[in-house]
Amino acid sequence: MDIQSLLPYIGGAIVIILLLLIVTIGYVKAPPDTAYIISGLRKKIIVGKASIKIPFLERLDKLSLKLIPIDVKTSSMVPTADYINIQVDAAVNVKVGSDSNKLELAAQNFLNQNSDYMARVAREVLEGNMREIVGRMRLEEMVSDRQKFAELVKENAMPDLAAMGLNIVSFNVQNFTDANGVIDDLGIDNISQIKKKAAIAKAEADKEIAVAKADADRQANDARVAAEREIAIKNNDLSIQKAELKKVADVKQATADAAYEIEKENQRKTIEVTSADANIAKQEREVLLKSKEAEVKEKALEAEVKKQAEAEKFAVQQKADAELYTRQKEAEAKKFEIQQEAEAQRAKADADRYSREREAQGIQLVGEAEAEAFAQRVLPRQRQWIKKQRHTRNIPELPWRKC
Image 1 (spheres, rainbow, N blue to C red):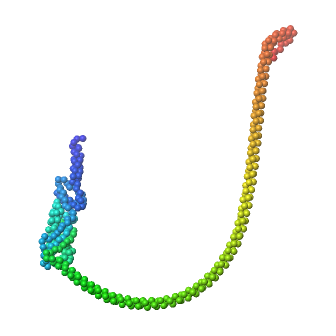
Image 2 (image 1 turned 135 degrees about the horizontal axis):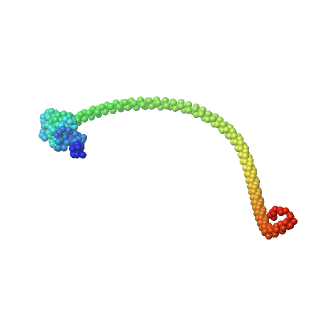
Image 3 (image 1 turned 30 degrees about the horizontal axis):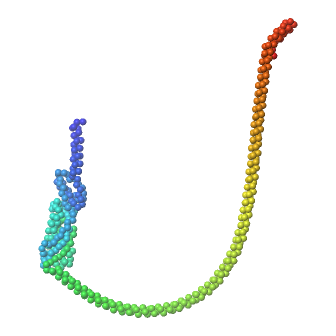
């Protein structure tokens, strides 16, 4: 392969390596409390997300989104609507708005600036608006309704801060002060008014309490008399009812006593009858029990006798079987002995016969040998003599046979 054919692959590898370098070097991840602003080839704001910044062609700037506490205090005395010079001290919290429009405005005004710079700019705006609201309101109104004063300052300052990309999170008035003690006098006057109102309220309350107490005493006395009368009536009725109830109770008690005695006598009779029946039943059960016992004993005895007879029968049978087996074995042994003896005798007879046969054969062989020897010795001479005699007497020659 030549270099020209490898150029596309080399170019692709270089592009991939460059992309990997861009991703590695340019990878940025913004935390939730900081806005990352990417500018250059494109403009992008990321909060709590990740993105890619193209190296050398784009830049990254940071904008803090953290809460900024500000102590806002008028630097000099400010006249109120009723021409009383006062100073106001408030605690305010601001932060950069989270929507894209305010993020862009805040980036234009506070990019790469620290929180102190942002707090200083916001403090000046808030102080100016607070002075304006102080000039619109009366001192007593501001002192008595601080929440209203704070809301008016917030409403007045919000457009100015929104133009910078900031939001007011909270606005709390800490204190109102003046050099002539007017606020203290207002407090004294308020205290006097409060005391006066409290005394009047107390007198009215005492009066109402006295009237209510007298009325309550009267009502309590009436209630007590009525209650006592009602109690007397109820006690009288109760006595009458008790007498009637006692009479009814005595009658019922007498009836109950009589009924008790009658029932007691009936129960005694019933118990006696039941006891007699129980004794009779007991005796009947005892008789039946004795009969059952006798029957059981009889059956047990019968079973025992039968068992003993069967045992004796079994013993006799076993003994007879043993004797029969012994006799059979003796007969078999005797038969075996006789057979063995007969076999022995037969073997002895065969041996004797064989011996006699052998002896006879020996004698026969000896006789044959002697005859042969005799024939060898005598017969030739006899034949010659006989032959000679025949020849002399003309006797025909007979065929010779072996003797």
